[in-house]
View 1 (cartoon, rainbow, N blue to C red):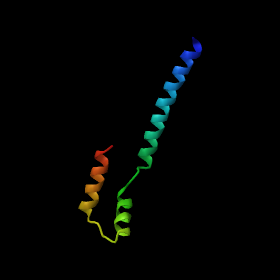
View 2 (tube, rainbow, N blue to C red; view 1 turned 180 degrees about the vertical axis):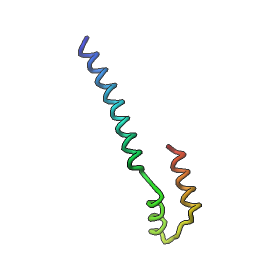
View 3 (cartoon, rainbow, N blue to C red; view 1 turned 45 degrees about the vertical axis):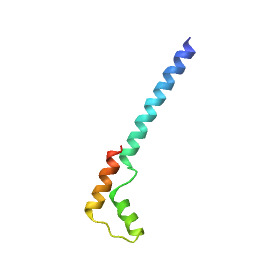
View 4 (cartoon, rainbow, N blue to C red; view 1 turned 90 degrees about the vertical axis):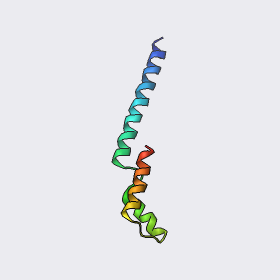
Length: 64
């Protein structure tokens, strides 16, 4: 009985602990930022406007 209870408690603690850690890391190191967007446009041979960059950032933030 105690083994099952311990297993369930450990699984729940691991899940919530991992979720907290993952969210914290994403806030520190976002997957894409404005500088990355500028670099991608420059690699394609284009110079992006601020409106294009803001539009892309808004669409990325909406999907979170």
